[in-house]
Image 1: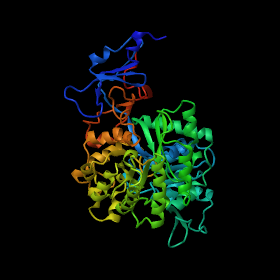
Image 2: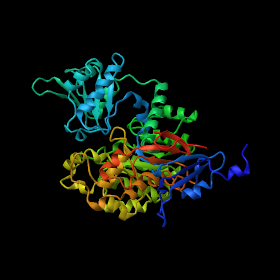
Image 3: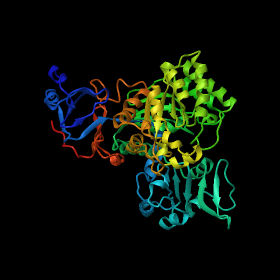
Image 4: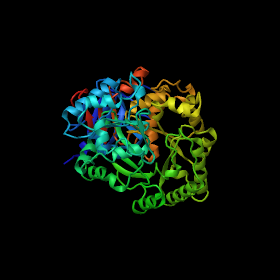
Length: 548
């Protein structure tokens, strides 16, 4: 039984740190300590001030001078899809060279069950390797001759070894799948093991045996543990292709039994081309907007609202047809009518132009300003369309999918185009709210610090000249996008994304000081201690063991 004296005391206090609470900087010395009570921030101040809030039952943690920031919120990640297979895939994010990458496959093959697939599905790019290339079929055969191996570089190319081709039932007589291509040696006609396009990728992935439901649940929990180690406390899941209701079962299982440690906000996508209106209407009919609790909540419709409005990477000629635009209007009107927010994928300004025309038509009947409709990516958005988006009260979710492939984008969009892609300075001038994320796990790395480095430095891994200075962000502003900005998407900027009293006690204690570490070291930052709702969800044991 608690006493009235206990009710005035903190559950936990964290002392001897460097606290960046977020929000407007206040004059005076930087806070060094935090107090947490009931899962929320009780106070933020000096060690002396916070010590005064300790009682007999208060846990005390010595931060040993480390930097504390609000918990990161990835504003655009396909975590539900990724979680189901996280534990059965390898990840090449941050690896320096092809030799190291191949050694991971060799190690996996040494312990894998007979015939078990070994896969690396996105999140890396050959430009990050010293060799600046992907592996070939022969190299994959050499390190895993008895196991099917599938290695996909973002959405650009996938490489299969000989065992994988056999397991997928593909040989030299197999025709190219719809929407894909099987590369063949021009001299012999034999398959090289390289495949291109979503049709080819899905042809292979569909041949891999599915993971059992209980394994999906454990795999999703393992993914959250790894993401907590990077300082993530929340994710805005962007839905994506082929995400029917049953794909959410592992996440809901964690939620139901109280094991969900990551705050999840879900945007719901259409699962099948040609059925977009009906499927999204069903989501909206059965689910009230904002349904959920502080750990899991339905956030809106998107990012796949209509397949024929989705311009993919924006690297090929694309136009939204009149028919697709009419359907987008119907879906947008339905969302506004029922009070749902919407997020939609759009890279090219031409796509954005048609989307905004649709939204403006809806806005004339049902004002959108309070619904926070948003665009994901917006790499090529013009100042004119930024003004239109701002007038609608809309926002943009930035992601670092260009960090690996600025060279390819520049080839498609013209020399010098990447100096303003995305045009962050124009976005700031227009006053458009900005969130930030990764678009992981296939289109980019899941490492939020790589994404922050990209926002700050303007560099890409493939060496294309970086963005102009006016289209880069300060460290403070980039972190704000990754915290309060992502909280804005889901109407939670009061409760999340900062460490003011009353906010959820979600924060990360960093391995290096994000604000002073050399710029090139930002991608290597990790979290030593991650806290969600006042509870420790990751602990590297670098801080002092807590005491009562």
